[in-house]
Length: 188
Image: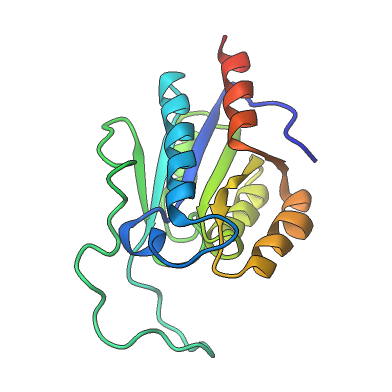
């Protein structure tokens, strides 16, 4: 369902737009394209005094998986938010250790303190961090808007599955331009 409205208390939540993630091969958009759209969104939210949340993932939680994690320590700075988005004093930074941004973090507390009723989600990867966060946001009772041209994945089929089958069950979808336009109308 296309986006119908932006609540007056909406927050932008950007998932894992950090140095080592945005440079990985991705589809259908490059990491650079996602960052550029995320910057547009963040600027618009900041201009309208709406919260911007930058979520970063750091060391993963332990557990066995069929796809092994790379051996050895991760390079220094891999988990730093990209420069294009970092450095805005009013932004909220959330550090997670799992796929979703709600589990084991203070994201829900940060949003509730500000009276947020809707989250607008974008980032990398669509079927992992973004989808996990969207599911939890829905379960926490937030209105969810997914900015499908400001997210990308490691696999195009996984991206499509999230966008076409999962996201319509969790909220509304929009483009960057649609969200910015609705935000301007809501805040006018």
